[in-house]
Image 1 (cartoon, helix red, strand yellow):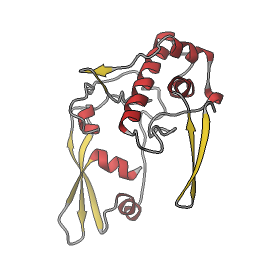
Image 2 (cartoon, one colour):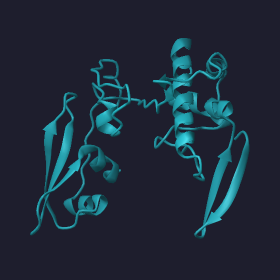
Image 3 (cartoon, helix red, strand yellow):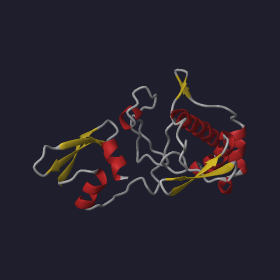
Length: 205
């Protein structure tokens, strides 16, 4: 890894943080989030988006011990092992370039596979000012995660999402992008609980 490693102890656990400057951080992110053999313009676009996302996260977590997580929770970061001269060139070709909306940085959310369409950022992230609108997509049909399924027992589901006494789960409302907007939980001897689909996904993991 470039930069330094900072090791600290919190509540009996070790925390190891890689402290690295932004441009060197991008050298480990862009080839992990894109494919180095992609066209140069695509790699440059990825560099700009990754830089914007990182700066938006840093500004929102200024006092946090970790600004950006190295996984899909933020951006995948592979360190020196992931670096590639083609993605390095794309980063060098876009020095300091970021995306702004009305003069301000915004978290430039992106993904590997949308399953045929994206959702409005205001619905998914509860950020009404973001200029990211849902669109149909025909580019990721070959992605292995274009369609997928997941099974979980009712007991395990109740435990993960924190809804004891769960008896039934029903999707409710379909948005313009075809996704469920809410999930209704029926519980023993209690009124139904309504949760946004986004919150349900976050709790489920």
